[in-house]
Structures are given as structure tokens and as C-alpha cells.
Length: 311
Image (cartoon, rainbow, N blue to C red; front, top):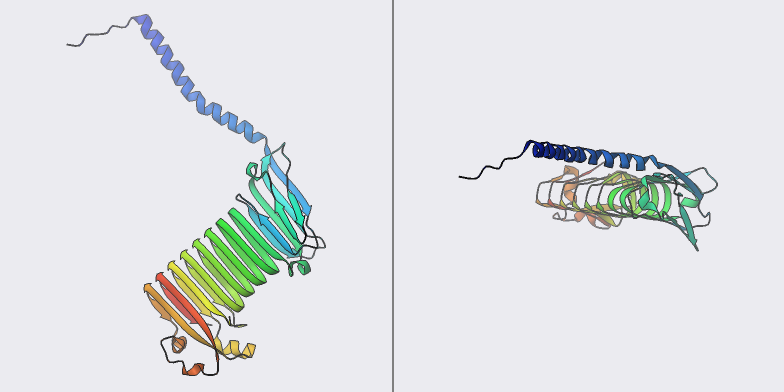
């Protein structure tokens, strides 16, 4: 039979007091941490800065190793500018830097890790933008581009890309995130690991290449032009929906004589091709193509539905 341990009354009182003190300490720790955090947040406030960009630049680089929202637009202004708004330590300088190397200007935030809710707004004169190449590289954030440019290169690890307007060439790449295109372009090359690629009111003169590993592709074209170099849309997992320029109307507007050659397939999914396009299927005898310019259309999915129609 186990021995009985007797604790004196004074020992009980001491033990009870010790337990009360320990409980109080445990309760106070989160309060102290919360108070300290709140005190540190009192030293945070809005940070605003604005700088002029070179009016002679031919290329604008914005490369941020952080999450930030970047808006680039054109307006009726005389001087190109970049504006920073963020939340950060009140005693820190905005540290918005603009460096120029010949025809290239680069925007940088050296102390960006201290900033939160970071947003950059770039405003450009329209005549300057038309000859400008944008080179955009972000981490987790968003690029929103509006206007007419020479070339647009936009890459993110994880974030959204939105391009509205016009450019000779558009090249986008995301590891994770949605890409949205709207406007007139000569060539479009869009790639994403996980995410959607969507296009509305697309007027493309040369070619479109859109690829996603996991996500949907939804591209709608106008009748103002036909991509003479073709359209290629590919996804491993996801649906594809192509709405092509109306061949007859586009030929009338452009004065060209194009004809589609359509390859639409899904290894594990259905294919829905509009009845007025079935004669352009690659499996058909292209008798109507004699003397005309073939425009290759490829829409392929490993898993997912493929839909092809025209306006």
C-alpha cells in the first residue's frame, strides 16, 4: 500500500500562492505581448513620396521583391512621375529611388521590407508611353497597366496582371495568379502555372500563345483583325473557350483572304466546335484553303472542356 504524503497547512498555503502567481504570469504574457505590439504599431503611419521620371527614357523597369500594387497609366501630363503610398515606421524615410542608365529608368524601394500596404502609381505622358518598353517584375502583388506602349513584359511569382490598351508585344508570366488582357496587340505571349488567362476585346495582328498548367483560358477576339500567325491555347488541367474573329467579316475589314485550320482536342474532356467552324477542322480536306492564307488555331487540353466558336 503506497505511503500517504501529508502536507502541512503552511505548505498548502505556500503552494497555493505559487500556483496563483504562475497563473497570473501566464495570463499577463499575452497582454504584455499585445501591448508591446500595439505600442510598436503606434510608430507606424502613412508614408507618401513622389518623384519625377526621366522624360527621355525608352525603358522603364520596376522590380520589387515584395508584395505591392503597381498602377501604370497615361494621362495629359507634361512630366512622368511615380508616387509611393505605404504604411511604415514614422521615423523612416520613404526611400523611393529612381535611377537612370542611358535610356533606361529603374524604380526601386531599397527598404521595402519595412513597408506595408505598398502602392506605386506611375503616370506617363501618352506620347512618351507609345515608344516605351515596360519591364515589370514583382513578387506577390498586382500590376495594372493602362495605355498605349511599345512593349510590355510583366512577371510575378504570385499576383494579378491586368493590361488594358495597346502594345506591339505583350509577354506575361506568373507562377500563381490571374492574367487579364483587353486591347489591341501585335503579339501576345501569356503563361501561368496556376491561374486563369482571360482576354476581352482582343485585336491581335500577329499571334497569340496562351499556356497554363492549371486554370482556364478564355479568349474573345474582335473582328478588326485576324492573328495571321495563329492562336495557340494550351492547358493541362482546365477548360478552354475561344471566340474567334468572324472570318468573313474580318476578311472584309482587313481586305485579306484568310482561312482557319483548327485543331481542337481534349485528352480527357469534351470538344464543342461551332457548326460554322467544323469545315475548318484539321481533319477535313482543306479544299476551301486553296489560294488563301492559312491561320492555325490550336486549342488543346489534357483534362477539361474545349469550346471554339466565332463572332
